[in-house]
Image (cartoon, rainbow, N blue to C red; front, top):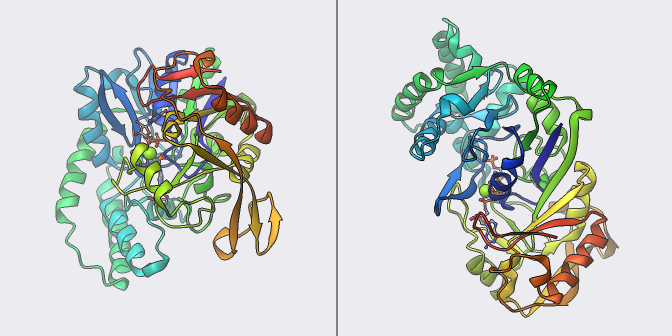
Length: 420
Ligand code: GDP
Ligand code: IMO
Ligand code: MG
């Protein structure tokens, strides 16, 4: 049986914390897509950790963690992260596994990402510049190098061939940055990677399932950044939705049980692209300040706004969400009035659907207003302790989405989560 935890918005919903919390009930935690563009924050022994490549179950005892074939892997980031994780006494030799079909991010992928973004001018995506799009392009273009290739004697030749191809593209962009230092650390990190458990991911996971083990699939980014269903072209380059679990791990769809969608009690986005409920005012500034909304990977300030139920209902539909976790409810403690977007005004007409190109439309969010609870909630341990006004807010969202909020997270700490 496989359960999935994924983001329902534009990323940074708090997936890392939620996966860490749920991981104790599972045997295997597996990342199925994305790469070091992800930044998943969790707290261990009161220390803040941000994971980019390693599944967020890695700090729970006696769990197996798999980096699945659908992920793109930067060996340099992985090595750095392994060092941090190991410093907490985690034995990665025992609990970290990497699928041999996982594609490698090589230094020229990062250079190409940078060059492509620069060339876009004011149409830039706001990429994390970790080499994500060029690596997925080489995967679908059938040129990429995979983790399993590292063990082949011809790896260096294949690397040089790909690097040369990239160099021609970089010359086209007139990109002339020296990447010698990137290459040095890359080759050093490859030696490290070769020492880790490189496995056939699809047999690994299916053998676990056959033995009755419970698997938790961890999504990166969010549904509105999905390559097919997100706000294209302002998206990432992988399928972030539940369908990505099957192709990103090699598990069949009927093995999937719960799809647990994570949403903030409000909404954020980092990078370019449409964001109908964005608040470009003092309230937005307040959300950023109280919610500490700065990117876990790039440190960029996140754009902030009200919760968008039109986008959330769309995300529930394409993912088949069975349970919702609402995070950062405590951030709304600071507000006297709350708005919830229930429809869009698209080119003058009311709509509750996500249009083809949100970025090309004149979209105005329409809101239902709620009184805020305006009282501290971060110490609450049970649903009964929560203010009635918060319960009304939650109830409205449940009814609109027709999927129930099962958990409310009321602080970044490991124990700050309430079962509804
Ligand atoms: P992810 O990418 O979905 O894992 O989310 P990030 O880690 O990028 O961003 C979520 C941020 O919110 C992190 O700084 C978390 O520590 C923090 N966080 C998570 N849940 C809560 C919550 O319920 N309340 C508050 N105040 N912060 C939270
Ligand atoms: P987690 O897993 C928020 C955004 C970038 C950019 C677009 C494309 O922490 O939720 P890319 O580097 O993939 O080419 O960037 O997607 N983005 C994220 N935003 N959280 C993330 O991951 C993100 N990963 C990518 O800001 O707009
Ligand atoms: Mg993040």
